[in-house]
Length: 318
Image 1 (cartoon, rainbow, N blue to C red):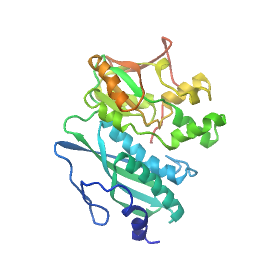
Image 2: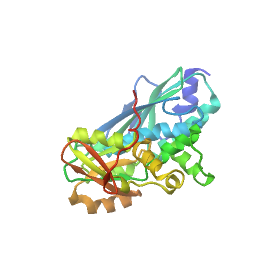
Image 3: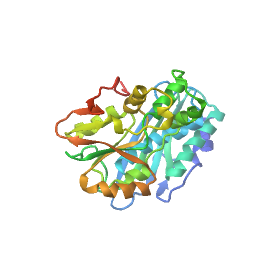
Image 4: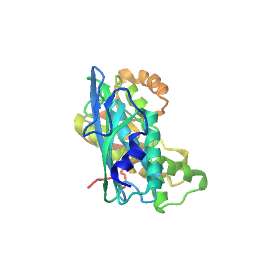
């Protein structure tokens, strides 16, 4: 199968067709029509085999996850997803793999309202590069730089499940059949908190998605906002599957530094604490207060009132 036949069969006529797409796949560039008084939010993620995913990952899960991790970036800015481009590098054309991969990709795209408008395919080691575009009301985007002293720190969902799921897939950990499926699914199929991000636009002072681990990712907010933080490790939300599968100390390690949770960490001033309850209930997501922003530039962790030191510090790209 030639390149353009591949594109035509598996990508060009697939998925959602948005009305704001003037020209899509098939020309040198795509043309889109952004809404008035909206800023364009753009993010790009690359997933490389044996770096970001195991060779054994089901292609449908890889397609879904490839888009989900980009959607999580838009969620952290409070943006509404709109368009994406896909650069797909493969060692060879495997039509069965492509059919399953594109099915997973377009499942996520249709659910979150994203149109594929362009991209590229080439031969080489397997990697997926997606650039996603979203829209956010001008001046309303959430940033990492807005946290203020006294703000409360929250996270959505539960932390650590994906990292334990990855260790199960690697054969590093064995867990009961009761929990194995859930944990692996949380690694393969993260839930980008798109509606939660939009609900937080007028309430939160800063936000970030948790991709490299809580301890690592919160440092970006602290640096950008020039503040410090106190985190109560006891308050970090963990699922029953995590807590019943490993020791309490190991569970904290996964939750604090495991990465690939794709939950939101955000800061909220005291004046908005009540409004958060209503906003996120409507978004259908659970959230927990885990600490507070403070003066300085250090991150302090406490467990039952005593200083706590994690054993490692999250994923590093280099």
